[in-house]
Length: 387
Image: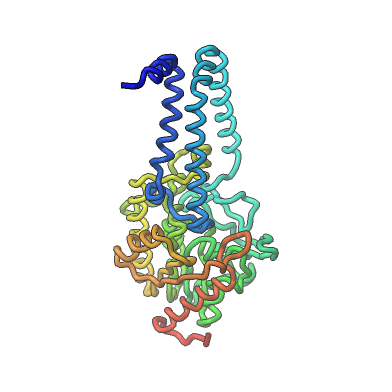
């Protein structure tokens, strides 16, 4: 039994005050229950934040949540009294919150947002909607963007490949190495000559086709390859990108995506506010993560098989900015190793990133290109140039 003093104090609380205090206690309990093991199970690695920074952010959020809950508990008597004595005013406040949420949703629906286009439409390289892939690069144009203090030209040919110049398109009749993926393969923040496809082409003396699209997930890259590969008469190799730090985007369903069995699925309708919340607080439940691991393995297996049907050498590049965290290692093991998928492991210095951008800088892309060229040189039937 509670001591008399505590019992009498508890008895002075109204039902509304007790309910408010219970909410605060629940919030505090959630903050304590969300230990690092739980967080690692539901919040996947980030491409833009190091493991240390990610843990610090998570710890700060736990502390803030606990402080909020404690504040509600300490002020529960006042909050409960306010609600009980001002029911109409409390109702109006609730209505105002609902209207504010509705207005915010309306405003967000007028904008290109996250998975729909991944970036505002004015950013380069520009994208347009595609009913099957979600979005693709706008063809037959050159655009410029200042990244890391440099003006970068993005020249896109008529087929959607990034090239040196718009008037120097990829020739599908020539022997070609195809590169799939997202912004790292497109060459975010890099001149054409600094991109991985351009450097591999220069090393091996073979034409490259950069069919990657910024913001793509693994399934979108596979669908793009499936659409583009038939038009190349002599594909020599297909180079695909996998990186645990961007695995999270493979779980998005508010864009066209592939489900189990590689069945194409239309975007799941979702409130923009919910998508914004997902972006700010990227929680994933275990079932979603497990399905994503399975589908990603299926997609990469299908990519290998598709390349081989055309007589091309398949090559999966597994990228990692050092050091590899335990969660990233587990994702790589389960998606690639456990599925028996062959891949080329390339670990990069953590400092080889474009300042203020985070994408691989010229030192990183050089290391990636050399690793790819060395791997392919002994497998392709052609006379390549010297490194």
